Amino acid sequence: MPNRKLNSSAIVNIEDLRRLAERRVPRSVFDYLDGGADAEVTLAENCRAFRDATFRPRNAATWVLKPHKAAL
Picture 1: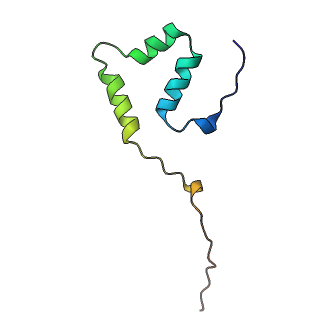
Picture 2 (picture 1 turned 90 degrees about the horizontal axis):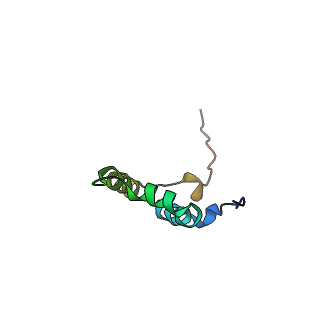
């Protein structure tokens, strides 16, 4: 399998990673991992947990540093 670089700027959520894996991983492996087991309770709970998580990177905001001066 050729070494292909991952374009991380195109991945913004778990579903993006899932679609990438579907294209890159052998079909039988992807189906096994993606399918869950039995009632798929753990799979559903993990997907729900990722949907409920909010990611707020601080480096995406503009910060203005103000001087801290005090008269004594």
